[in-house]
Image (tube, rainbow, N blue to C red; front, side):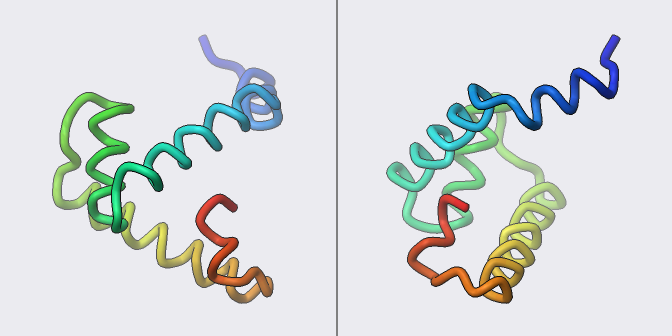
Length: 82
């Protein structure tokens, strides 16, 4: 079973951070736009294409995250890997 401590460990583990950074970099390098990156991420991580509601949720998450980063004063060119 999964415990809260396991979840906290994974959230704070440097190895997990490095792997997620590499995954993000791969998506950025392989796809030109958000929609293509979402499709690639689903294929790589889940083994299938995202369904329409999943794609919409992912696009909304990216838009909200970009806005939060912009509000925090992070320039557009530095936002992709934040």
